[in-house]
Image (cartoon, rainbow, N blue to C red; front, side):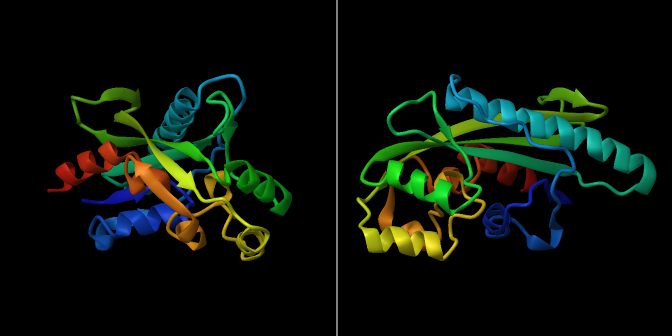
Length: 210
């Protein structure tokens, strides 16, 4: 069964490669622009709205591709991850665009616990238990969160995380499975949710692929 990860995230691709047969897995980012995060709305609500927006874009794009090229994936996976400000659940922390933003994010998370939200949608045709989306594509969405504890970083540790560019493309400016692993610990929930997928969505995917 052909599975497409509609994402440019290398971390998400690695996660899926460890879960399903890589011979049937491909990855391709969406052409559409991603919906922006804002303050004043719960992170849980925002991450799900962004994921649904990605799912809609994927359904539209692959409906067009199907008309021109023919072969399409049987399953499409889209996902979004947002870190929640440890002091305010209405303030999302997305991906830093530069070292200054990454530094500010790590300083805010240092020595505190925070929640990480991931929303994942599975798109599949002829799945009557899923909701209609666009054309023949139907979808189901799952949203989970985990709690991560960040140790209090000293100056040397902070500089190291910034200078090695491990913050690039990572919500909150850190990679749980990368260089930040020695400073972070998941104390509730699943590592997979922090790395970019709803844990329950991946369980569903495994059942589909059995």
